[in-house]
Image (spheres, rainbow, N blue to C red):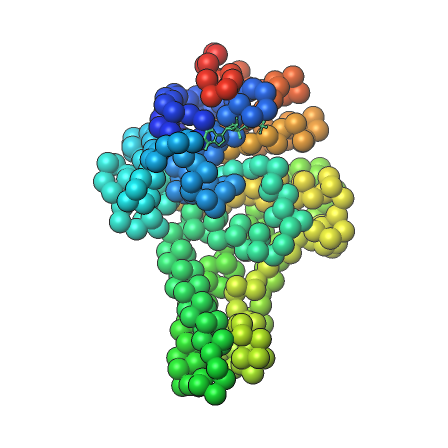
Length: 358
Ligand SMILES: Nc1ncnc2c1ncn2[C@@H]1O[C@H](COP(=O)(O)OP(=O)(O)OP(=O)(O)O)[C@@H](O)[C@H]1O
């Protein structure tokens, strides 16, 4: 799948912008704080109706504006699909083929993107919540039904946690049983999706990591489940503790991922280089995973990551993706970019102005 055109209205520092893209490689070059990441972010937003770097929609609106719109044209399976996501006083509106989707989960999946940014190192080094968010975003893109299951699980979890805060003498254990039953039903669905995702991710990323490390490192990705064997039984067993602590101590909201390189937990004991290569393997694996699940390669957004990679890793990365996925690179300089293919388009970015150079 490729994105052929992008139009921005009041998105960050772009009041009005229209761009036509190269199907192969697009490079956005410019000094710091000119608006390169904003372009990558807008493409991510068009795909997922949210930003990769802020939870606050307000941040995405140009200062002093009340509404914004990102629209684009996607070409997949030889069909052109117009997409549009806007933030208005009525909230978030997503349209595919000019038709409004009532549920955002029905819209997501029209455009698949994989974003690789320096912050992604946090998937390896950061808190478990970052790894859960990573799983949720990625599974949601490939199988939108996951978002429903996750939403229902989270809603029930919230309800249970609020109930656990009630005066203990007023707790109705029958009602808690009902909540537990619902939590287990939705929780199983979430766990099933995650298990399948991690299995596929593991197979592909191990192979890629082998290539990226030139056979020196074996990567193993493990799904670390909070539920060990029987969710219902474990929930029951934890009930007294949960009532005491006013929160649910077992369930997929406590899941994690573990990355082992040559049998060492790379999150805690890996070198910077190993952690970077692991993050890269995971991200690149997603490209093939999206293809496996949807029959289309996603669009790849490489935001400010090339300068962090040495020559060899740049070469490995580009040789793995160019010709396969439409790629967008943001960078402050073209100097360190080696091994670029012949077919590419460079966009010079300066203070929200973009000049296309062929
Ligand atoms: N909501 C907004 N409205 C208007 N301008 C904004 C808004 N949010 C950010 N900006 C401006 O966008 C610019 C930052 O853009 P961006 O994050 O894309 O930088 P960049 O070119 O990727 O830089 P770097 O190389 O440092 O990552 C800054 O000038 C900032 O003031």
